[in-house]
Image 1 (spheres, one colour):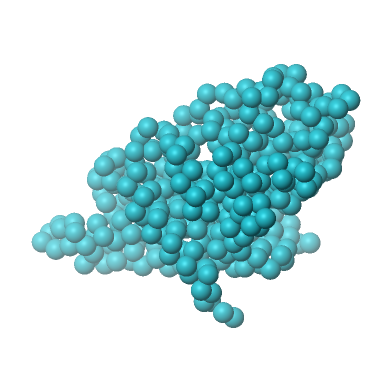
Image 2 (image 1 turned 180 degrees about the vertical axis):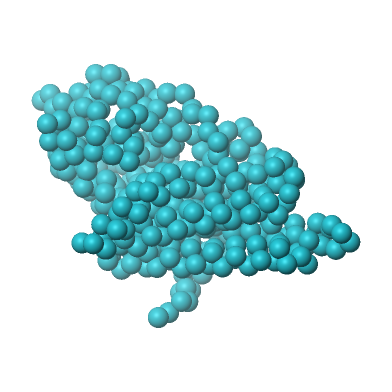
Length: 379
């Protein structure tokens, strides 16, 4: 076994860390308070190659391997988890979907503009009545000659407000349920398509989350991604890399919270000495560091399998469920180490505590991950 990163991977990790800590970390609290990330940030990210990380150079991408991508996501999440999830959705759920499942004409139309940051992508599977049970979609797309007529509502759409290109999942054969789901590419400004108001969230407040509405919305038939009624399989294919990315996000949040707690424990004096000298605090720090490292290894292992194009559904689920639960444990302990100050917004651990909570929910709840793992083991 080789636990060493290669030279290119180390360079990506270090370059991303430098940029994220110098440029993004100082702005993360402002993004949270204003509930907005300026769009010029995405242009700067595109100029550095972060908006097309997994795409070939042919389409303007950086052609990174998946491990390098995960390393970058970890560093972005450590600096600003809200921005990280926005970049992750754009890269691994939109760009990757179009690259792997689109026609060449579709690739040439969308990928270069997505890689340049001229367009931002959003992905929409969830509906008000279809969360973990993604096969129970109600948004319909009826084929009418050269277009689909779409009606319905999508919910919890990351990047919904700022996106220009949307990957949506719809019922094209309602009688077939999950086997009648298709995937469409929708462009901002299409008649009959509207974006709802931003959701008010506990955490990741800088990242916009919205509802999408379709009322007799005409989507050209040529915007079908992959084959008709093959959308559910497409969605499941995209979940593995996305879950690994959430694992990386979880590690980044946990590492940031740990670093804050470690430093605070050295500075906070009680009973005549720094609290890091008390065994109760030392044991907390030891457990936090150990759990983060274990989670990191699970995430990196899943990323390695993905890089090798090996099946990794179980490993991705393991990485996601473990890393997300570790993140929530670590941020809880970080707040505890800070005491009353950890409850105050002036301290970053308060934001980490809020940001971490959703990692156990989106891209499949912890309960759903355990179903994936157990079914895989029994199979």
